[in-house]
Length: 248
Image 1 (cartoon, one colour):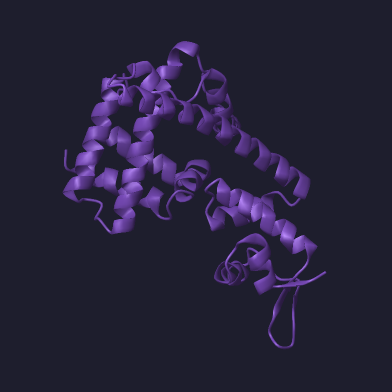
Image 2 (tube, rainbow, N blue to C red):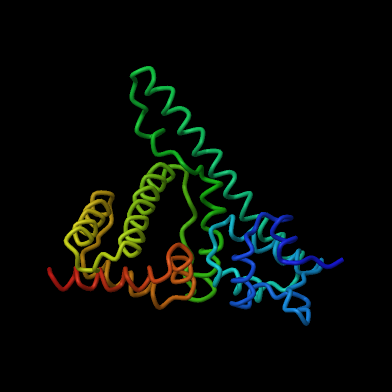
């Protein structure tokens, strides 16, 4: 059975405009185009669209989804990988929702949450899962084994992850809003981020942060991770930290 763009949009909830865009960038090709110019989709195309939507749920960019589908041509392999990623996200969200609910209850009662609980996001096993792909990549490409997560490190890692999330979100928003990389607000955020890292035991300065972001830009895994959150973010971070280091 073949479906028109309008029928696929109604069936899946994906807009007609999005389907046209997917076709334009080569992400989802119709199986047939009629003489009148109508795009038609079959079962295979609907299966690919399902995989695209799973990746979109995981916040993959369209460019990275295209790469993922090209790298994982087997539907079963692709679905299995997506299942693992979605389950890992579900575990994290369940934990974060629990923390939020506890915060709401305590706030209503006028109490303050214990700082250890306040930043609770992952447990030891969840961190191992979250870092597994990166650990394998670093070991395969650079021959370095990332130390195994210890139970005592979890609260610290959760707090640092929260700071990293805030930092990356701000930089992504700054890029989208058109702030120059040397804008005073951007540079202040960089300074605060470095101070946070130092406070939590990291020996880092402006030059070290600039070197780190340059590595992220040049390394495929880390660049794609940043670009998946905001196109151009890896380049923006590199330029901003270079300017910050030059001012010191």
